[in-house]
Amino acid sequence: MRKTYGAGYPRTLGALLSRPERDPAAAAVTDAAGTLSRHSFHERVLRAAAGLRAAGVGAGVRVALWLPNSTGYLAAIFACARLGAPAIHVNTRFRAAEVGNLLRRSRAVELVTEWGFAPVDFPSILAALPAQDRPALRCVIGLEPPAGITEVAGLPVLPLYRDATADAGPDEAAGETPCLTFTTSGTTSGPKLVLHDQQTIAGHAADVARRIGLDTADAALLAAAPLCGTFGNAAAMAAFAGGAHVVCLAQFDAEAAVGLIRKHRITHLFGGDDMFGRIAAASGGRRFDSLRFSGFAAFHSNAAASVAAAEAAGMHPHGLYGSSEVQALFSVSDGESRLVSGGVPVNAGARLAVRDPHTGAKLPAGASGELWIDAPSRFVEYLEDPAATARVFDADGMFRTGDLGRLAGDGFVFEARIGDAMRLGGFLVSPEEIEAVIQAQPGVAGVQVVAASNGESDPVPVAFVRPAAGTALDEAALRARCREQLARFKVPARIVAVDAFPTVDGPNGPKVQRVRLREMAQTLLREEERGRRRDIGAGLHQH
Image (cartoon, rainbow, N blue to C red; front, side, top):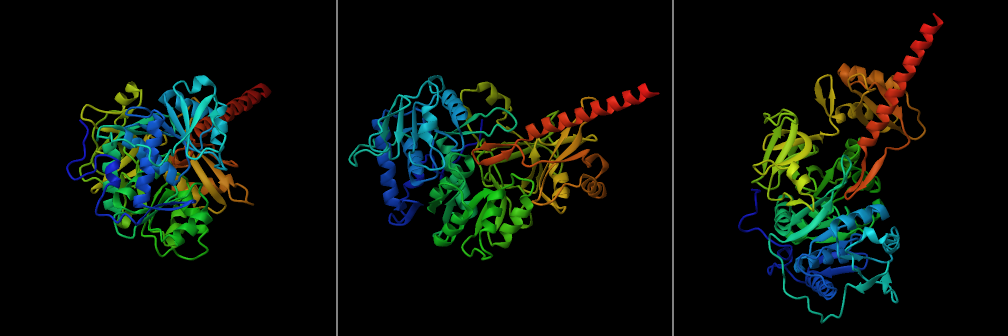
């Protein structure tokens, strides 16, 4: 049995909005169209619920949401929750093949989208999908569809906002009502649809709000991370739980983010390390005086430099840990270790364990192994995939994260994905150990390290380096620095220059495809081994 939230926690998303002690005239949500008060936003949610109900949405009807960050997106999330309709979040970076895969697997019945978002023409992509990729879709709902648009891809187009007098109907939600799905990035395996019910989303939001101060009177969140992913969604729901002002950024732009932080006195910000570095660079050397807490996830090898720049700019960064399955902001790092990924869970009742990845035996504090978690923020299941669900739970309800970490104090330290960790010289090694040494060398803009074999020898580390502009890779010098600072088995067998790392667009931003890098490294080592054998053969022939 999984842990659940107890008395005193909100059990539905609607409960995050219905707090009578809050000032209804206070700012709730701001986007490019303006600011809505709490009262006005609640009215917007009811209108959205009425529009969805009129389009045939009810309890259990799956609704795909394919929208940029905006008041309309947030209203659609709460409207779906009110109707008991699971929201299928669609990454705005997805294109035809990915959208078709998601609609086909989720069997979404309705799709809510937007016309006129310059970076992505959602309706055109949808129109290009073959019918078999949207087998259950019966209607497209537009936030504000242009006049004269009545169909797309042969499907009727309806407006989300109907007559202001339309009936939103009763709140159909309960704690166990399916709420939403996040799509995993699929960087190490195929993407899965992670289903949460309403109590996991609402209860976790309350925990996060209390833990990081989103419940203070002047709290304001810059919603820069996409709401379609757990990172952006968890932060936004926590802001509503705490009564904070949510300021939406539809498309990330560092200068725009800086302007919104200063204009709206933003106190809280969440994003990847790269986003933090870009905001710090765009700050013009002026420290932010309103930011009190920013939480980052380390996605890139130069994360330390980006976070250091954020610290200097007054962003007060804290390392986080989370996943689609246990939700982002699951844990927060504080104190002397606040720049380390991991930390102490925001829910005091969470259970943590570290086990040997091969035997399953529990390991003591300080030993590296696979992280297992049970917490009330944990997901319900992988949608329509009972086999995948069964593989990640033990008999006691603990979730197998697939992450490498170690217990420390009341929390833990995240080290790497198990699939990214390398078995070198008989030891389990995080690639970050080697990356940190190479990244610190002059002329290195980015580095990724993977383990690979030529097919006959044990795996060895191979580093891929993105040189800084105007510099050339000096492989011999970099390997020499590694020999000075690392154990012999950690020194890369090869250090290879690349123009860019292969990436995949995840719901929380682009992530490096280490699987692809491992394939590249293995091909390189095998070709070198074949070349070595040819040289040996040629030498023997000469003799």
